[in-house]
Image 1 (tube, rainbow, N blue to C red):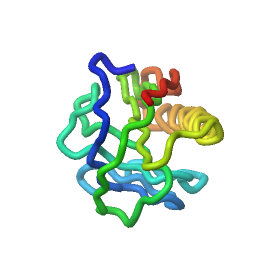
Image 2: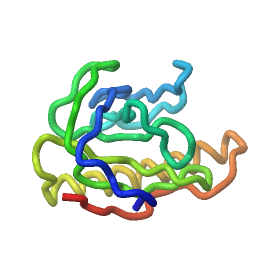
Image 3: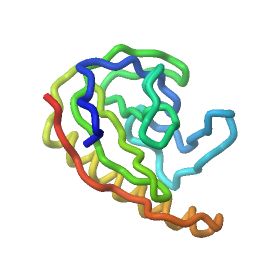
Image 4: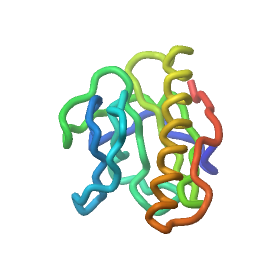
Length: 139
């Protein structure tokens, strides 16, 4: 869980719409090509830095939108993740309460994503721990 408590709501900008295979960096370059489509809308919290210094990552369940769309949503959970040795938690945001099936799907996806990212990082010469580290519901 992050050091500070999570806010009740967050403003999230969608960067990777559900179904996309491409994750782009802040500069627009391709950061990661997934072997499977992203099952969730993925983006960042506007105006909030994550523990790694990058914009705070967010996953949007339910409604989302095109890349660049912005949504004000309740923060329902925090998925703990580490990327190249740095904390890289994901805030889970949704209008609807988080269901057990949602939590299981998130954990399964980020375990798989961590494995694929570790292999990709090693091929690029990057080192450091990468993977899923836990899940905490906030409300």
